[in-house]
Image 1 (tube, rainbow, N blue to C red):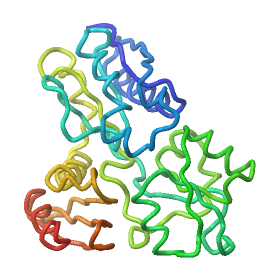
Image 2 (image 1 turned 135 degrees about the vertical axis):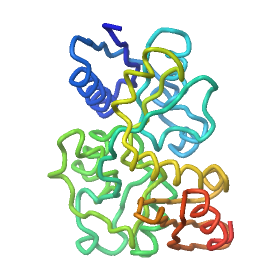
Image 3 (image 1 turned 120 degrees about the horizontal axis):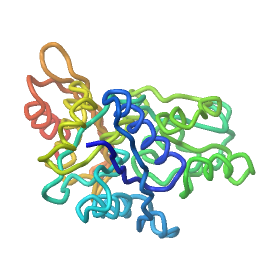
Image 4 (image 1 turned 90 degrees about the vertical axis):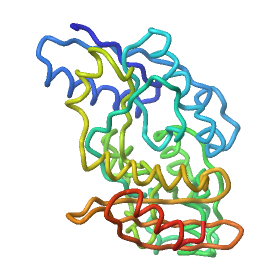
Length: 285
């Protein structure tokens, strides 16, 4: 196979992610050329629905997946946290090495924010944990790509906003980071900072993509997504999960806020299933 068509959304971040994957593949397979196929998704066109609702229904990924299934592209590249746990049959997923998974503040550090300062986030998970750190803040919903959100802060519509560090890194915007939240302060979303590369499970494309897969990232992300899948918590509550492979298995940190309030826990397991089962028990999910 000499040419690979890579389906991606058209945002600056999505294109940067797809170019990263393309560069890795071209480097690993001399003579291979890649072409980006830009796909408009429902999430790109719907500017009013909450981000959480769009993510739950796969609005940022379904059209990109469909381009591969329809033969319009060979590979799909997504932000892993946008990928619903139930995907279309026939597609396998590869996980390149994860970028920083943490949440960050842009605009001002937490200690610099005045009482009742307006902070933007479209994520119930981020809003819940930020409210625990600073109950006095006014948290408002914010939509748009990374640069749109940075502009909203720069123009004064928000004093600060919570974004993913990984996106800022991939776009060369790390100078905008005013504070990086520690995991004790804000547990990331399942899959945050990771990319998901999808293609048909069988055939020459799958063999090309094997070079991308990072075992440690796969183990961590599959643990986090297993918690999401087994609890269904993403549909009804604010859920954060971050897993770290260890010599003895995996450590899983999770946060949830639902009708029973906010809880946080850390568990260890010999494998992802054991860690997830322990976390469900610990949090009462």
